[in-house]
Image 1 (cartoon, rainbow, N blue to C red):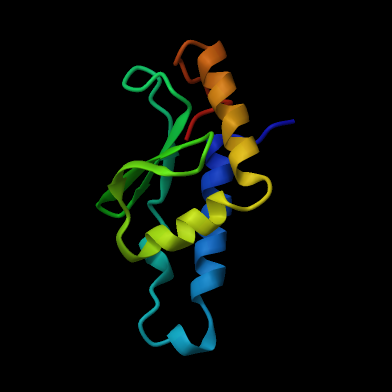
Image 2 (cartoon, rainbow, N blue to C red; image 1 turned 60 degrees about the vertical axis):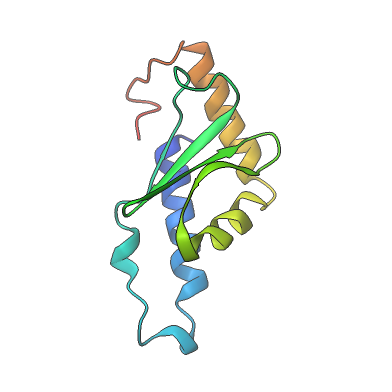
Length: 114
């Protein structure tokens, strides 16, 4: 069974918090910064497989075939997001979500809701 975008966003959030919560970063690390992290896919604006990652006031769009950034930026968290996208199951799971969005012609029901 494939993961939903909500499950993948929770996975990315946990990854970012885990990576940044080391002993050297305790003083200025704010995990609440990731509470509004969101993954979305907009088939109407871009027909190619992509994911839009929104974090705080920043947003970036990534290609699901290559994992490269298409546009936007996430500031200092971007390198960590790219590391997460490079993990073994991240891009295949996101591609499954994309296939579900395509199959439903862009309509997202409760199963795929972010």
